[in-house]
Length: 186
Image 1: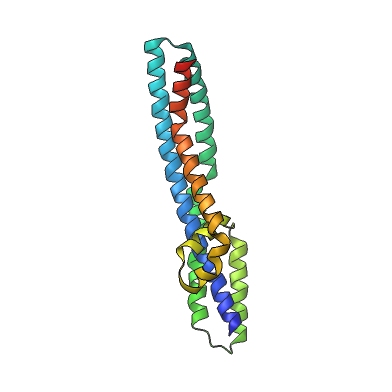
Image 2: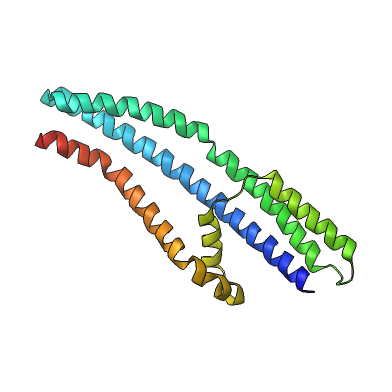
């Protein structure tokens, strides 16, 4: 009976981690789309300020930002975050089916257990793996015995990742303002 519980926990953990991966990729796509719009607007504003003030440093920074924005947009569009998110959705939906089957299995049905185990391994192989942060998010969002067993091992990693992601987003948002300030000081 213990092997059923272990497999059930593995399937559940993988499924929820894939759900978290899908959410993360959808949020990443939305953030990058917003940043693309934000940087495009900032570049336009800098271009207008360059024309009005005839500031060579600001003009050079505007050219640099325009080229960088083009490269970043092309790169991020090539990442296909939404397509990867859809793949995770398909995968965790199939994992959910395995969970239902495993819950309805008789404890002495070894063949069905092996079948579910093999299908679980096939599903792991058919999809790219989620990142560690998705697993940390799974443990953070869980409750009961599962969280009590796992949380102490991932707590620091989870909060480090959350803080790192927030700081990175803040830096990306503040970068044009800092660059404009540097151009004004120099």
